[in-house]
Length: 58
Image (cartoon, rainbow, N blue to C red; front, top):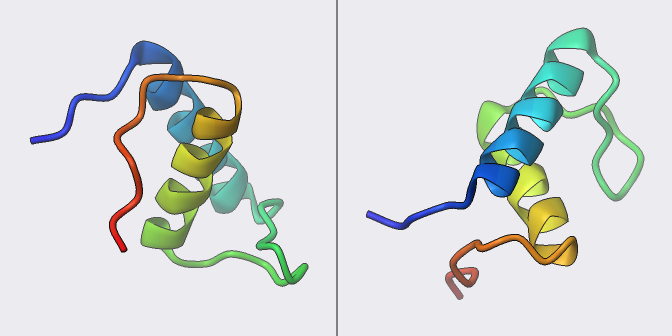
């Protein structure tokens, strides 16, 4: 199983919270309703901040 840093876990937690509040939006500007999509957005943001996150699968 892939290992994620504490910073990455925190970021995913934040995005999940935003999704549950209805404030999380995707790149196209639409509201995110899928948990999987919220996790993907959180990991992507963590990657941009330099957190230890495994590479995306192709």
